[in-house]
Image 1 (cartoon, helix red, strand yellow):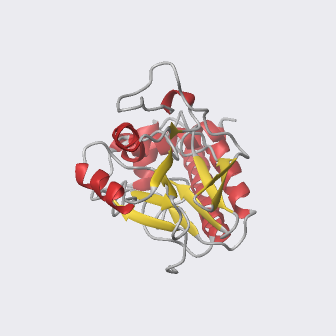
Image 2 (cartoon, one colour):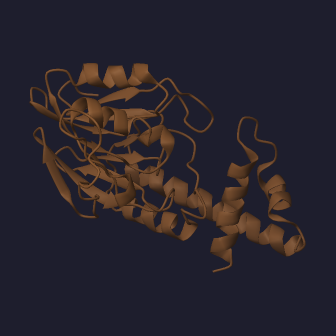
Length: 263
């Protein structure tokens, strides 16, 4: 990454099969700018990560805290960071937005506007375009930096492996539409919510879509062969044992695929 890139990544020490090396927090702001935006401040139970964010933003004013989606490993520290920095928390879901009270605490009757598709946020010399990209969750968003042609993808596309569809909140129909939308941005870098930067957003989105369609075809064939199988039995045939991955996650994947096939 160029030393002049207007982003800095801090990875929380919360590794797992679902979070890979940990949750990535991004600070967006041009080098030398007085203001900065924080994207996904991480989980609530890692005070050392919150301290690292504040240290990285020192001598700059945190203007907004942006959330890519509702999962706790991205959202959990947002309230504490808002209180410490005085910055509002903004999400696509209005229920997750909050404004800190002057002097600390949370304002009860004043919430910032939720993120909206097509909105442009300009802070610290950086333009940030909001894309509503449902699928992983219903409230998922990505952030496009048009001046630098790079996409922050949250959990919609990861640095390696594949992402889950958190069914029924997220749906496979939405996810495939989102992947098609992201492919239209071409061979630009992506900055994921977990894992390392990828060089080609369109290629990554195409791989994800192809993998999903392959699973759909596999499930369609198995369901024809085993019409009486339960979702759990179908999951076992498709995925087999997955050490470290909770069974409910696998069942979510199968149920999302069944929902899609059932139309």
